[in-house]
Length: 94
Image (spheres, rainbow, N blue to C red):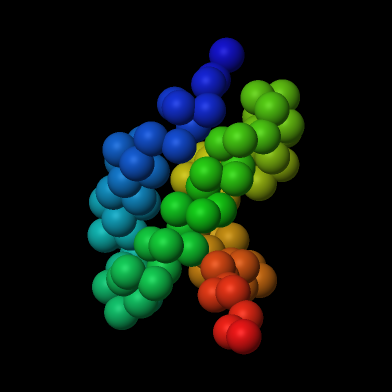
């Protein structure tokens, strides 16, 4: 069973991102997008990846099977095409 601590370890997210970068070398169009959007895309990827990892294992496995990709691949797809990641809004000034 995953604990909250293991679900949100930055090294897991970074390793998943690096795997996607390595695989992008085989697809020049994807590598170009990843290089161009860099940090912004990584933040979106990390946000989606953490949320996907937080799902119950059965749900994650069903999504992986349906999408025919890894969890990191699904997070990258969502980061590239999904809705905007909610931003932390500063409190209203008085």
